[in-house]
Image (tube, rainbow over the protein chains, first blue to last red):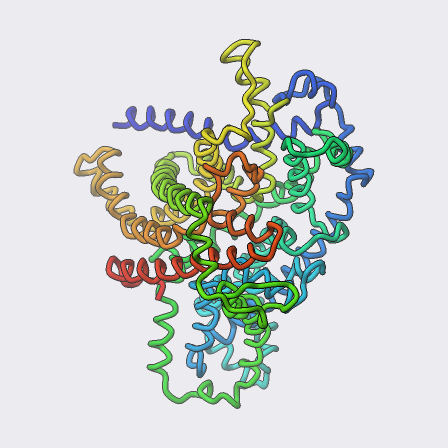
Length: 295
Length: 332
């Protein structure tokens, strides 16, 4: 038995290592391309180990000729303000829902719950956001559509219910604390893991958002990182389609940075997340598994 | 998302019961708790603007929308938009692709995620198990735009890793280069690999957590009875996971008409040559909507509405089935 298990363990370890390698391999390839010399790429193609090492791509990126500095600012601005706003709005909706016995709670729960079941579809959403709300080409287009989330309200409500004793809230209220004071001074500190979890989920959503800018942004000054990368990719694709006139081809080609620069941009865009996420992994897992597994 | 949805479980229903039980108490008065209701406002307004207004916007599907008249005063045309969609061959391709891809993803995703979770759980060294988990979850945190770049690094015609490094090793130096972004036959496999790479690690989290909740005493007892590892998995682990596996699968089936836009748009670079195998309902709607001409707006909204309504019906139906399987796991 024992030796059989040890043998199995070794086989498993080998499989796991191979899978881990498969997970990381594409990242290493892209990082390696970003450090490759452009001429070497032209001759040998993308290699796992650069034939000729070069940091020109990063020099170019940092020299801000690519608009990346500005896109970075837009991403950081929308991520920070969006996450802050989002956590606030979600917590404010979740807190009253967590109070037992609040009148009309069923209605307020159903109000957000229904949005998880049915939606108006992309076209109607697009029409409303651009024509009625007029969010096209504004920074709000990168912030507001992601702010409210029915699902996160329910996660946070559950956290509040399970981690904050109702008696504590009652006694604070008897001492004369208002609802907002209770939320900020008592609920937030006690439910910090929940707040952190939602904040992380939302940070990730804002940082990785290319969908909203794709639909709502055409102004280059409002490109965020992900959208900048997406537009670049689109231009490459247009080049390879045959129907284009020679003039248009040269015009687009001039605007596309070299291959190593593109991959450097990609590394710069995913870098912060990859560096940070292992430290916060616990919160992500917590957020995903709360309520999902019945104890 | 699917994982998230199961999480909802009974909360909604439980709450209703609680409300009924409670009588009196100071929270019962609306006026005394006005501030609590004020807290709902920002969330309510945002939900109204971004979720409920678009629901009314569905009327676009029954109108011939033109820019001059705006949405409300454009003429009604009944079901013409729907007829146009149903006559369009791309629409049918997109429906077929969406359902086929999702069916494969649901089945393989389930098998891979459960297998990975079980394998991770029987690993003796807990530290290495944690490290592996961290690595496998990593792709989940990359956006589909980044993933498209990673895929491009492999498939680029001129200098991609496969054309320049892998093919020459297999077929020798004179190997024929493949124009991957024009070979539609390869894309079901490519998309399958990309999707598996990106989601299986994250998908295993739910099952891993469920396995952690299994009573260790059962395994001890089984060992004393002489059950080997395989028998333990077959007779303890899998039966314990049965409910959550069923629910996750049914929930996913409820979303079989909605595809991951990023995967089918960014990764194949929306290449027209690949449409036969990469076009899904979501990308079809987007492409029609952004195409020139206002006739397409109506058609796109008709397709989007079909998708919403079908999705809604399916979620309701699947939820009813979930309630039969395990009442406490039903969404509502």
